[in-house]
Image (cartoon, rainbow, N blue to C red; front, top):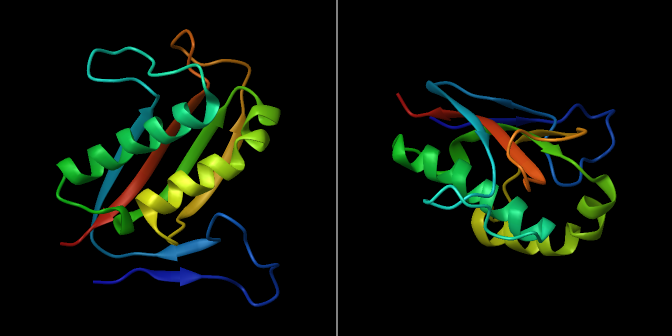
Length: 132
């Protein structure tokens, strides 16, 4: 089983995401993950640290289900501060490559006025398609 990346030829080249992924297998829906540790504490007030911890938590769910990072086909990122996200993109990019390599799933990023957990700046939910 392999996923096929879909990029319409008349679209601009995406940066940091993929326009579409055609996938076949078992679907895992991942609830929104924030930057908390095993004790349900936010790991840091730093935006990039929170983003990467939330991503690590998504990856942990995928691995627990028997998958790998390349099985993640869609991420939806909620942020409370777009300026903080933009300021942290270099650190996020470096951390992303350390976790995901040069693989980018289909992604959306949305600014929200707040998240349920006090102190949470980022929440990431996802979909993974695991081999049958």
